[in-house]
Length: 485
Image 1 (cartoon, rainbow, N blue to C red):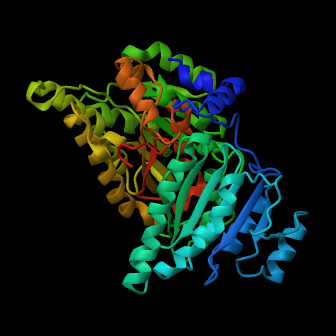
Image 2 (image 1 turned 30 degrees about the horizontal axis):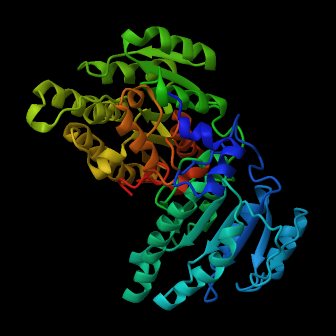
């Protein structure tokens, strides 16, 4: 389904004419998306300005090192604490000398691709002034499709109520900034880094600052140390080599995009779908060098069949993506009992059944140590929606399910997360009445709908070894939507 306003916005002449005439027509900026497998240096030669609150820059140096390893040229705002000799030496060793930047004398030609601000030292409402001092002069210079990341600490761990309030303020700041810069295709996120989790930040920054996070905006991403990690540095390319992945509902849409992306990173993907979708599922499996498994997860013996399949063919599984889902929309008073029951069963109960079968197949379970599990939630489950009491209930249940299951599996290094898509351009949204469809697109900060691959990119990140610091999370892939924000 084409988006006429997005197509118009892709025309520079149309954008200039709209701006010149002052027309109240919000032309969305075409999003820059990644193509192909992960790169060693996804930020190759990009300019990233890094700042920090004057009180402390506890995470700044880790962030700068991560940026340089990812290929970026880092400029450090002069208002922050001076760079240490060790940091200067590190950057020089990579051939990317650390350059200071005077925020009061920016050159007209400066167009940074990203801004990163370490706010972990913000300990009082007065310290929030440092956010203004850093971003106020830089935001006008940020390039289109730019990235903003603010680094904070968990408010509950703050030493005082005032410090907790100051850290909590960072979320409101980034959500609002995301809405302000979204019209340029740019995004803003808050990264909440727990004490001791600094070493797990690098993979998160590489993802959030890259085009692979094109439709993620206004999100708090928590990085902690709950899940055990493997020894050694996580790979940055071919990150899923040797892994076996299960994707349910793989034949079309988000499932298909996810299967392709996982396979591009080296995973052997088992594409599970209903027998009625055998053609599409088999074609996909052949295209990506994977396998096909035809099971209707509504059947009572489906979970056992899936477990037996992985035990016999692979001796276990490394990545489980619970993507299969259905809608049966009606207001509650008009909803038939089977519509309620089927949605709850496919979207929520089937996940628990399949996981239980994998867990109980043998001592320790079939999901291998340091495995990854990702479930599909929805912004409807977080915000509610008319005519979707069954769907929203199931998706809200998924959000709670991953939070609890993440605790159970953390000691084995297994992470469990959910993604909550907003308006994604699929066959389902193409069937929505025109005016409602247009409203769904324009309510996002980016002024457009996302693509199935946008969701697949987030799932692939969550499935990667480097994402060990993210678990029990529900990450919205909604372009910073007004609803559910």
